[in-house]
Image 1 (tube, rainbow, N blue to C red):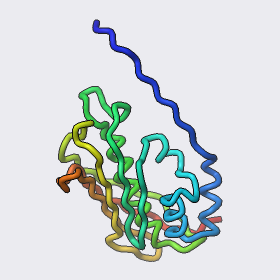
Image 2: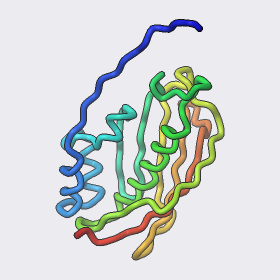
Image 3: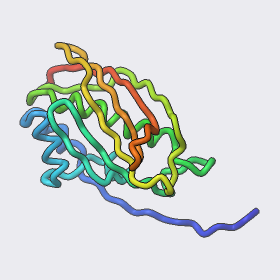
Image 4: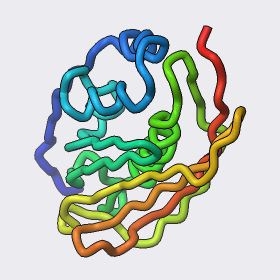
Length: 166
C-alpha cells in the first residue's frame, strides 16, 4: 500500500439561524446581494465547499468556485455531490431573488446531468441559475455549470415550493 501525506483543511462558519431570521426582514434579492458583497456572512454550505463568489440579480444567481482536492471522489475528479450542491444552490437561490420578505422556499426536486469531469486543471467554474417560471406556490429554475471556455460541464433543473414563513 502506498503511503501518501495526509492533507488537512480548517474552516469556520456562522450561526445558520441568523440567516433564517433575515428571511422575514429582507427580500431574497437584498439578502443574497448582501451575502455576495460580504455584508452578511456566507451560509455554512458556501464555506464548506469554498465558494469563491456569489452574484445575485432579479431571477438569477451566479456562483464561482475553484476546484480543490477536497472536492474529489475516488476517481480523481470533483464529486457529483459537490456539483449537485452548486447547481441546487444556483437554481434555488435564483428563485429566492424573486421572493419578498417573509416568503421562504425549499427544493422539491433536482434533476442533474453530469457532462464533463471537473478537476484542478479545469480551473475556475461558474454556475449560473435562472428562474424559468414562477407561480404562487411553485417555481421552476435551471442552473448551468461552465468552465472558463464556456463549455457546459453540468446542467440541472429544480422545482421549488414557496411558502409564508412562520
